[in-house]
Image (tube, rainbow, N blue to C red):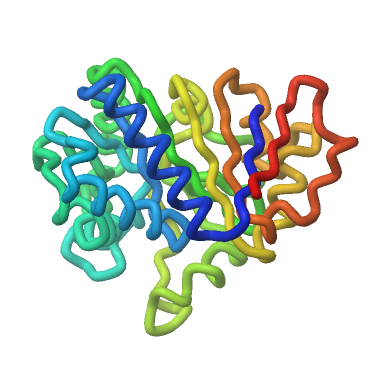
Length: 256
């Protein structure tokens, strides 16, 4: 595990965008696993800027989003389809047929999950997976639990996650209670992973993620088993890390 601490959110986001752009430069037909939420927004803005300046080209890229709310149509303002189009896809040259996001309005969610998993396999897997993290340590919508899903499945959202996501809705009652999410095994099969976290509200989750202990009660802690994982943080998100608790093979870097 490589942990990089940048001075602030914008420096962290710029570093993340440069890492994504480097992946595409080295492999123009890369398969990117993408995340939503507040944390990746500045990264997407920087990638759009780089595209407009001809520094990165998305025409051969395929994308696979981590998750989608159950019960929301693709054009719903709070769906992740809408988020990705509004914040990223509409401003780059990715082909529409190369965009993959679970269908939250599917008639048969079990079939949708199987088909989504198959589409990832048919693309020969994900080259670079971008992740955010919830304050309870969830990634995607893999919530803390005794057992975690292996593949893409419908999951129940915890009260904590519903409360955290309610800021995007008019009321807490409007937040869907279920979502389609990539499973932990699907995420961990990615060739490379970048976990992004910003702010004091994520500091405890990051501490538990990198502490050297793995638990399904902190789903993100399973990332310690991945051979090519970079945890990219701002100083607030990194503020509770105890370097003495990190595993011996963990590289810890603080940028000026």
